[in-house]
Length: 193
Image (cartoon, rainbow, N blue to C red):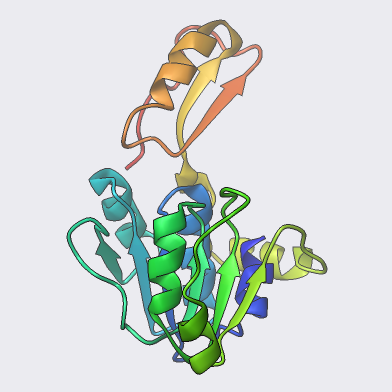
């Protein structure tokens, strides 16, 4: 999905990219944008642990949107990986002339959008839900080390530890929680960040 979003957003060498949401999709998007040549990858999230995590994996700057404005940054591309209406609105206002907006995060059916800003700056807005012909690029990015998917797995649990796994997913520093059938109670319950 992130490779398709990067292609649709025309991210290339020197691009300035803003990403809303530092969860797994946002962090993968930051790595992909960096691999595509983006010179600046700004990520927003309200959770400090996720902002710190994103800075280790692709983001060049992390912003708490509750305390720092992003509107007016004039980025080339904005990718929403949050689905949060206010993040989408602010992200669009951060896009410069002829920029691209990619809506990846699943939000509500109806959102308030800054239509005048979109029209006056001739901004392209599109959704991303499905993707095509991205596997070869994905395999290349992962095998070259430009995109690290392993770091997203912050906890691993056995099937008999499902309750612990669900609780771990609520912790601020968690990303992806894996439940492996057959894994014993002495599983690898550790945070990698």
